[in-house]
Length: 177
Image (cartoon, rainbow, N blue to C red):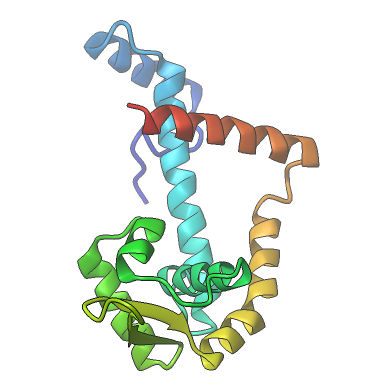
């Protein structure tokens, strides 16, 4: 499989030097290390999503479906038992309303969620977990959290905490741009 310089995890010395020369030739003030970090983060993000999708596939759920069910349960656990509006879910999930609508329709068709009219504003809908949705989520949650834990098992506790802090800071910085 061909890998470009942005996404290749490790370049041999010669390829790295050529890529560094290229970066500096097109942008002399660019920090080549930042360019390499960008590439490896993009690659790791894709690989994590692919691994999680593959792991979840055995349960018949996609990451997007699992995440939506998880957000609904998390909100129930903090006392928001009235359900969530699609616009709230769209914001939480970082999905367009059209994409979320298709996701809701699919989960509703599988019996994992219900869509009901809002109790005070009949123009709006709220989405709630069904008992079947709670059961599938609860039966898979520990397994999925253990899988995620395994993905980071090569790091010490201190390294994981540092990685979290660095990535959180990067996320905050990027969101300000």
